[in-house]
Amino acid sequence: MRRAILIATSLLFATLAWAQANPTVTTVPFESQTLRQRAPFNVLLPAGYDSSVRRYPVLYLLHGIGDHYDTWVKNTNLVEYARPYPLIIVMPEGDKAWYVNGTSPNSRWEDYIMKEVMPYVDSHYRTLQQVGMRATAGLSMGGYGALMLGLKHRDLFSFAASMSGALAVTDWTPENMGPDMPDWIRQSIVAAFGPAGSPQRKEYDLKQLINAPVAELPFLYLDCGTEDHLLQQSRDFSRLLQEKKIPHEYREQPGIHEWPLWDHQIQEVLRLMAERWELEGGQVAVGRSEHAAFSTQHSVTLPRVVILSAAKHLLFARQIL
Image 1 (cartoon, one colour):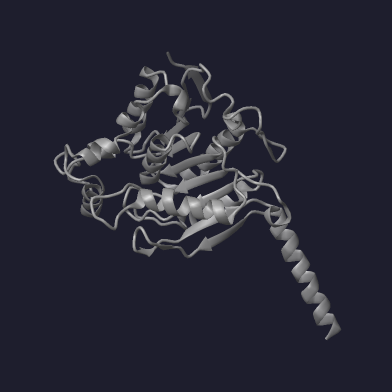
Image 2 (cartoon, rainbow, N blue to C red):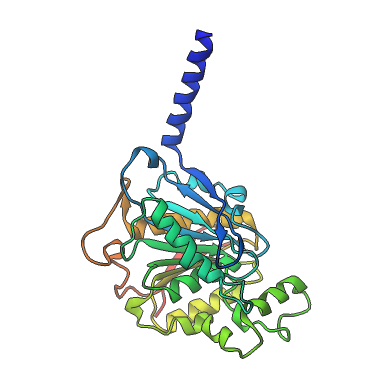
């Protein structure tokens, strides 16, 4: 009996030690009053969270169409990649709704994130709530959603990242989607944005949302695989940002619209975000100014395009005027 107690105690301490050395993921079985349905979300807490009194910045990480809130944890090594960073990562549900307040009364997914999930996270976890300490990122549908939320709520987010984003979705209509577009995706787009030319489409058009003072915009990051069917949308949006002298970083590398690419690119998003947030030595650099966490956000640095050569697997960077 005594031996069993000793073994159980040792296992308990080993489990606690593991939890302190690794991020942990918790599922919040959230009942959304806005959506009138259950809309759970995952919360990844940094290593050592339970033994600390510190507050942390937050990344809202969005999934793609056809997936759900748990997909990032299931399909990537996100927990391992997050280990070095003092960062809370929230992965909300998005269904197939493009993270917007859609055309039906119970499809208010933007409100679900901004008015329900975010206040819940801020009230239940030790988050840094000052300006500059929130970010959004996502893939495909979530890439669009991340930029849309970051730009539309630029008073709350200072970094927004799109991986293989469907950035021109508000321009897609039943007439121009092409015969290969699955019917369920066609239906999701019309349900989210309404018919062509609707005010709803203009409200959520990224080309419209960047028409704000540059100093107020979050720093934008874009990437896409060179064989991805959405590649041209990232290129076109980067070109528009260049024309408007909006600071951003855009990268291409070999790959298609699939998880191995996103498993790699989420590492780059975390690294770049940590670099810009100055998450040095496990500490968050705050206190220098209202926008301290992004002290370089509003500099005159020109947009940068980084292209990974498929032939030589080398990174090339160039400044584009």
